[in-house]
Amino acid sequence: MTISTSLGHLFPLTGAALVGLGLFGFISLRHPLRQLLAVNVIGAGIFLILGGLGRGEGVTDPYPQALVITGIVVSVALTAVGAAMITRLAEERRAAGTASDQPKDQGP
Amino acid sequence: MTSAFELILCLMILGTACVALFMRDFLAAVAFFVVFGNLMGLAWLTLGAVNVALAEIAIGAGVTGVLLVLSRSRLLALGEEISCGPAKPWLRLGAAAACSVFTAVLAAAVLSIAPDDGLAPVIDGLMPLIGVENPVTGVLLAFRAYDTLLESFVLLGALVAIWSLAAPAAWPRAPAALRMTDPAALNVAGSFGRLLLPVALVMAAYLVWVGSDDPGGAFQGGTVLAGGFLFAAMGGAIGLPRSDNSALRWSLVAGPLVFLAIGLAGAALGRFLAYPEGTAKALIVTIEYSLALSIGVTLALLVAGPPATTETGL
Image: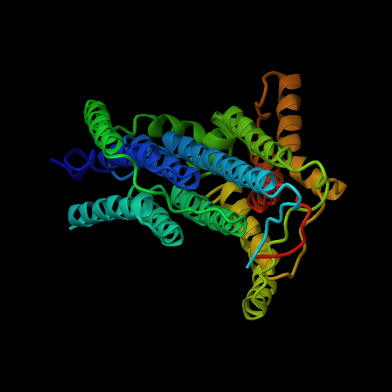
């Protein structure tokens, strides 16, 4: 048995475990910023499944590699939009709480 | 030897992911998330996927980490709590059961697929046609150029979405400044940012250039550029531009526009996004440089957030 057949599933299985962990985090953590982090863990797991299953003798299939790079960039775009929405919601809450006061969004 | 290393690496990836998810202190959690991203990069290196390792460490660990830390400090400044009480026991139990079943099904599905690099020989056979030697760049910009074109528009769309979250009074001002308020930190970040920005420019240009034959490329180069911009902005070496700055807007759309124009020119000559014989490499490098500029500026602004009314820093 070569290394790639005996160990070939190690990274994809780690990816599957990461998806499960991230999903558990997403459900059980009640703060949106933590859920955003959990979504990123799920994404990393999916990339590892996708890329790891392209592993051959010595080389890894460049096709899933390209897809994973695309995925990484799209997931950072998603994270940025999510973070901006969370911050905006917090500003709205604060503006509603202290209606007279303009929301300040910076501090120490 | 190799297998022991890979086993330990996978255990460390799972361990850091657990800590990043369930650590009580969110700042420490993000620190572990960055470690997790770097270990993922190491896993990609083990898989021989250097292009992905670069992207994962720069974008997955670096930019995402900065985004999360920045959001945390903005939320704290708004008086929000990041920590959350423990979820109800029944929810935890139910979630744990459901996720275990899901993971088991997923693992079974993974095990049913044999790892295979079946497309690698096909791509190797096609590479001489386009004159670049990095197969990942070949897939990204020639064989699956359509995906990459759409992806560049996704980034632009994300920025439009973030800008549309700006309060009416804030549009079209600059995003909230990233300048640090602590004078000592600002001093350090300022000097480092001034040193780093030119280095980042050269490194980004280099990464894009070698990307056609060796690991590297537009996304990796663009991220290095974004990192340079962000660090310089945190140190106060550069300010953030207003959202209606026309130079800024042109640099945001340059990459997607050049890509689309070359694609449409290909359509006029035969097929959308097909490069004429012999010109493929020149066109690919042109697209990559304009994409790297747009990606760098877009990523930096994605991190900076929507236009804001306040001028104060971190």
